[in-house]
Image 1: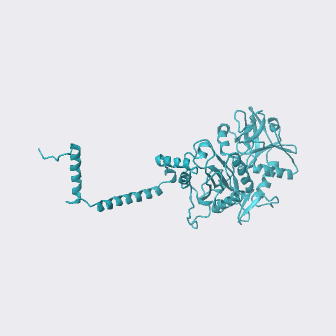
Image 2 (image 1 turned 90 degrees about the horizontal axis):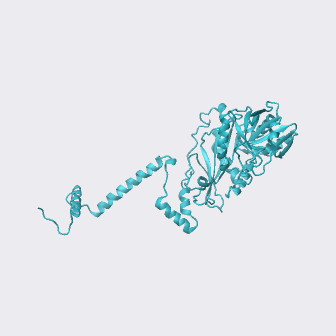
Image 3 (image 1 turned 90 degrees about the vertical axis):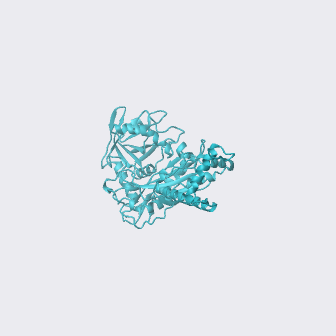
Length: 447
């Protein structure tokens, strides 16, 4: 029976023996405190280096961060200070930053795109524009270009939880002489976003900031602008509540960003006339709602009716008013016009219909052609009794309607070259692409 040190239990004696064995690796003498500190620091620095490398090797979408205990401390500090700058800075840092990559070696041809078969789908381009408003009552700071890519948001951001967001759509065209690019009425998109922002309790960029951002986005992606007559560069400005918020309230921070994609025709029919279905069960908007602004929450609810119609061979759906259910309002993504004799009618924008910029332009061009244009209630009877029907919008341009189906009956309309819709289409696109003189001051040149 060996000697036992007084005062030590079995667990303590076992720990002492293990400790003695572990010291044998250092020789007969135990390591000095300085040597142990040196080894500890070396291990820490190596581990930090590996973490740093791995964090940049992973895609942005995989670098998810959990708020955890530290985040709760930040939230607590936010509540005590009222500003929430630490938490907001944490999520702001994950947004795209300016990428100073040299673009001199980029192919100027737009990659391997088949310009002759360009549809309306997403083709990721090189750069996007980002601008932030750190506080709801402040203004937007100067924006910057960054590489096109994913955006990280707090899971409690206002846009993800409460749909606090708006978007716009406009196009850039390559000029006929090849000496630059053309925008069509971008200041109207800026004003429409401001009107929508007021309705959605959001700050908005000024008209000057909006137009400047659009121009910068186009100039950074010029190789993606389709050749003359092959399509356009579709530009998508977004305004979102990016700040973290739990209770139902406006977000504490907002982000304005723009990305772009080359596009061709919107409908799969191309420039051919389309077939529409009058929807009687679902409604796009209601009085007092947000149908008159371009909020993101207006669009997902129409997908059910739209997909059902497309499964039956229709291009889109025409929605009726939600009160009387007998007045036509608009399609899922475009405005509606009907022609009877020498009179053109379009549903009046009274809060449930989006005031389209193409719509406004077509009203003016139709009047220039000598037609009487009325903005009023358009009944189903007006629709099915029309000589000609067509849709308008940034994405669809001016698209003729061949047939409308209502309560199982299909009604046909005049289409072809000798129609008002074709004349208006030719006039509008000639102005947009710089092929005709812009007497109205609608276009903005980008050199």
